[in-house]
Image (cartoon, rainbow, N blue to C red; front, side, top):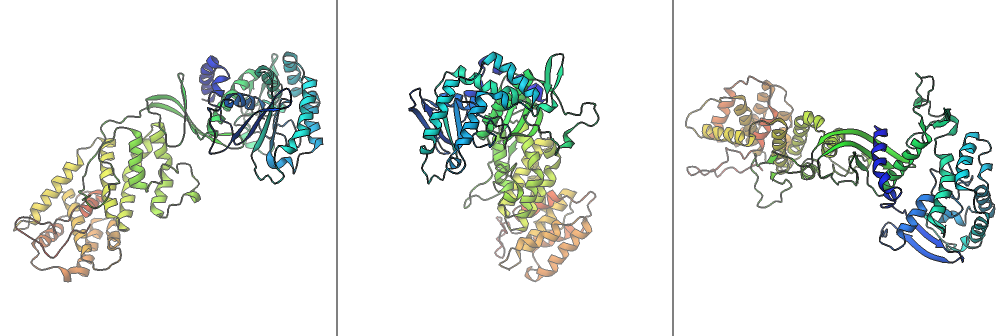
Length: 577
């Protein structure tokens, strides 16, 4: 799949060449200086986290020189001491805090001596020496006069470019004025011999060099598990110099986007889109997805094949299945049609996860400052599945788990006394389950059930319950009523915990009976609605499994025993919300 992505990248890259990378090249924090032929600082650019303005006149010029002058990685420096971090005599990169503490004339001399005669650096590595000599035939040797002139300038000025009390740890990057092609020639002389992971793995097949690429692959004595022990050649994979050069360009492009926080990458034959956290690909997509991260090198954390990803959503509507009075509280749930994945994520993030999901798909658990254990537990278990749904168009895991997941979160909200939140969670849950399963309109079903129970508890004679759904709704209503009689100032809804944990109908009736014994002193003997509800519950034996969803719906629904109507004004009770 990686090769496919590289080929797709290169088909686009071929049209614009290096400009495809440079058009969106990102300069890291530091001070950038351009020194002209007279030894004067002609241009200066200061990059900070708050100031990285790409519209600055010379930004693109500095970007190109920076790209051509940087090291492949810190294990492949020109300077053996790793104090100087540039790769050619036209540039000089060093961290500001190293200038006074670590930089010596000897280090400067060694850096330029190697650039003047790189063969010395590769004396012990025949393969690298051969690769360098091949590129030197095309690009030529370093210009000795310019090299010596640049070295002299660095020795004279470098210590004066920052103050003695400097505490900045970012870079100062010095560039000497030269044509872009001269920078490219010097860059190639560094890149080609160092482009492979290690030349000890290189082999020659019919005059073509093959080796282990450096990008996203490390192989040494400490990593024997990366070898393929079942093959005669145990290396994971080998590619030609041409292919490894293409791969480097691709990884350069990805690293530049990772530097900008654009970690979600979508690739197909027509385009490459790199998006930051929270931004959606607002179009249909088939192709490859990569999740990248900036480390010491570019890291690929996720790689997937995407088929039939859709941003827009059809037939997902959130209704008020359980009524909520919003006259004195603010809505967290947005009702009505949800038409795209961005709005869907926002609803789920807010209602189910206290706004902790969307920013923590890849956070370390210890870094997620979420105090509610149950919410955090579910976030950690299901965040990868939610990410796959929202950003890769794959709902399969969430589709299987959504029922269980949301029941857990709704129970948790009830037990902690967050009744409005629990109702919103239930309403959102119903809308998404209808979308997943294509079930009948549950809002209408619940309205029908509540109307039937309302009619039965207001009857002058006890009427039988007709279905398991009516039964569990009635049990939820009974639990709600009995718990509302609790006069304690503490969270009374924790009293429903034993009921929510029931796994059988017999246990459920036992728990209801316990609540009745505890609070029956507060119930009038002539309470018709209560008596009818109790009789219906005791007289019905459910046929199927315990239905937690309908039980919770009955508990969260406005309690019908307290409901006022034209014939009756119940002065002794109130809605338990």
